[in-house]
Length: 271
Image (cartoon, rainbow, N blue to C red; front, side, top):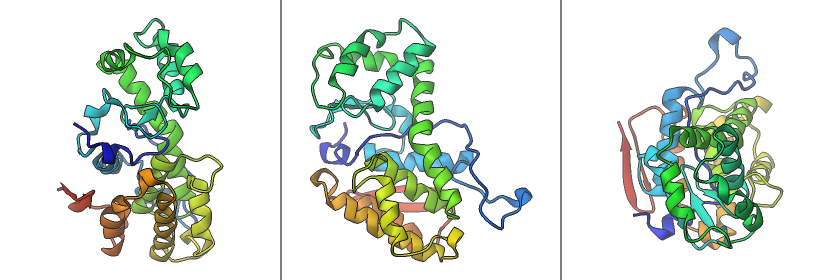
């Protein structure tokens, strides 16, 4: 059972994880033969999925979240799946459209008109009472699981890794970008990922611009905490304070196990 206060800590909701790799720009001064390991390395990506799941679902078992669906009362309608796709923010609609394109006549296809109508709000009109049960049925289909993975990558994971590599930051830095996009999305508002990064750039230079990686990442996490505090649903900043900041303070810029952290007071470990 997901704790409501934990589930509320998501913004645009995203977090799918496939094994696909991202072809991001190489960091300046790195030869093509010695490209550093990025968050898109399969082992590092698995760690990223577990870290996000600890914050979003209070569990390291992210693959158990394909079937998750709940209205957490944050004004975004239903939140569901491995990254918290929302019926009110458009990413759930995109996901079901992709699934239906790949598998016409699936159990969720009949809800597409309703998903288009409720996009932008918290209404369940046309979705109740059958949608949650049908979502859980669909989640048993490997094609739907793959669609969740692919949309997670397209909307959240790949853009975060690409930008992180362009900024010259390593695995931990790329993860701080990914977690921020998962919660805040990348729209045009003051708390979106791009705005958070902009606030950080005003305080410190990333390595790609000659700056110090630790100094820059501290500036980014400061900006992230500010953004979280702007919305009551995100006001618990422990996913930064007792997780990402802990790794940074220890100098673990590569997210090398063992990893120990806390989110909302719960302790987690990756050996």
